[in-house]
Image 1 (cartoon, rainbow, N blue to C red):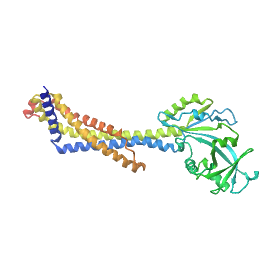
Image 2 (image 1 turned 180 degrees about the vertical axis):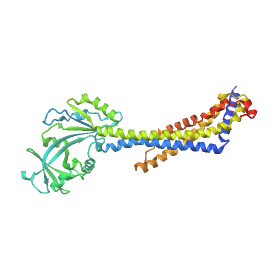
Image 3 (image 1 turned 90 degrees about the horizontal axis):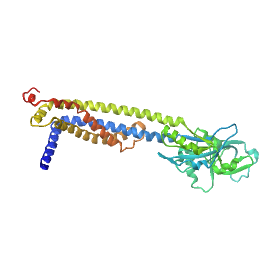
Image 4 (image 1 turned 90 degrees about the vertical axis):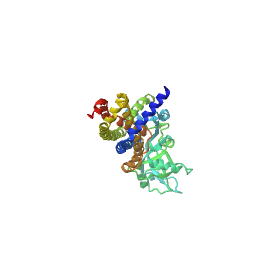
Length: 399
């Protein structure tokens, strides 16, 4: 019994090999169609997967996407307790959450030249917005101006405490590289070394950034902050859900997703994803039509072979299984080769279209191969006509 099964299996695979290599020209055409379809499919799918990560990274440069602020109850300024900052989670199920808390106030400023004594009240002729801040260690560039993050890096090499001054404030005070500034709010005054930020064209140009504790002392607002900003990973729906889950911890404060960022990111990715998905569907359809045309010719040419197989006792189901196995093997070969080429194609396309090479995504490879195998098997539909072949008609020359 075992010997008979082994012989049948050996004969089965011998017939499949003969079917595959009987017409090498047609084999090449089918493999070329399947490989090209798999290559384009893999390239587009890899770009689609990489586009989501690329958009997420690019939108992070726009800053926070959630703001936590006091509930407005009148004209007087409201504040948050700084302890709220530590109660906000550092991460969600999609990754780390970048956090920063700020205290805003208006102060009078004066340049502090080297060797100069404490200026008199007339010297404090310039006003600026003071921003006291503290941020989390994770993702500072996602919640703070990039120029401020760069300035913080330079402060690590100096022992003195410093603040960052916007370009317009520095120009008004005519600050040089080694100058500092005096800050005054009411009876409180403080001198500190400075780092001048490059111009950004934004509100940072009119602001002075200072350590939160010092800003609280200067403004007379101990343990208070004006607002908290977060950069939460996820889609707009996931961010909305996170803010809703966080609300019980906020107390009198309220969280607001910045909709123009979260919804803008979702809309852009939705359009890109829809376009690439539609293109993949068209490519797979064209591939299946090419393979189906070749399989139609195969069905016409193999009527005599099928008639002979049936005449010597081959069941129709077994005969069709042979041809389906042939199509599946062609799909596997074309998919493996084409999908690998498509991954490299997506890297080149990413450079040409987006200016940055797409990162290869391993999940794309088996998906592209699987789709190619499905196309090859479904394209073998014309071979079903072989089930109606009658051996007697073939031998009489009527086929």
